Length: 216
View 1 (tube, helix red, strand yellow):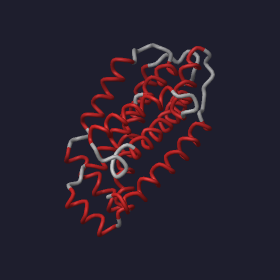
View 2: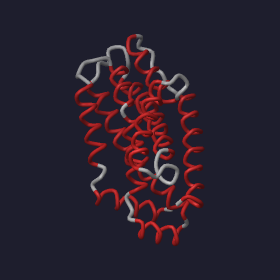
View 3: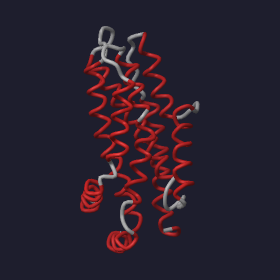
View 4: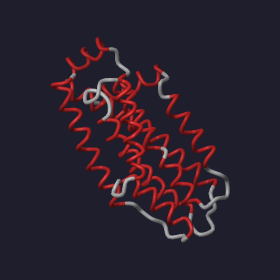
């Protein structure tokens, strides 16, 4: 698996396709977060943007190999393992960006009611929930489950929006807890949302990996 991860990471870096989602996310955070605002509310805004960004990154990693190269990788390592490695590459890259964003937003925010370390931990947990939710969306809205590009993108965007506003969604719960706590000073740690997001993502990625055997 290590070799597959290195291969997928090298493909992602060389393709420069990561620039679009990550630069867009940087603009999203840069415009939406102002220095001196309550740190928990700012973190809630920042982590919310990770849902569509992660889904987009997963879609990029799952489609970055040419068909011939994908066939060779599948023959050497197995379709499911190759598919999983692409998903994990996207998750790792996005979570790294998420941690950087959380640290930057924490440094800029107002800490009069919240200790910086506690805010950063809550932000990282919220980011993990949103990254996992975005991963599930990305895995379910691209190949091998949805092949048509237009339908894939439309479904990805709609699912990302629903993931942020639907009651019961792990991402919606994590973001809401951060934003709601901004005025109270009580630091929320979204453990139930994290557990739910992990279960959802595991099921979605397992389904997508298994589907590669009969749809790819």
